[in-house]
Length: 81
Image (cartoon, rainbow, N blue to C red; front, side):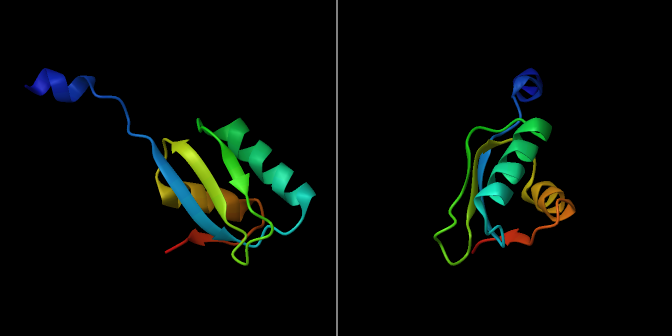
């Protein structure tokens, strides 16, 4: 039974965050930075939404690592409840 647990792969999750990413240029910069630094599926920022929602699929890092990374890029980022 222990061998089965050791063979499991890291989980992938969907991250949904509130940001202050407001321009098309900032959106492209942030998506490119995320894709260059993390193994993820799709990334999207909804500039029309009041929360400027950043949605990341197949995220293999925890939410707080991603929040720290986005904040290091100069943007607000928090888990969207």
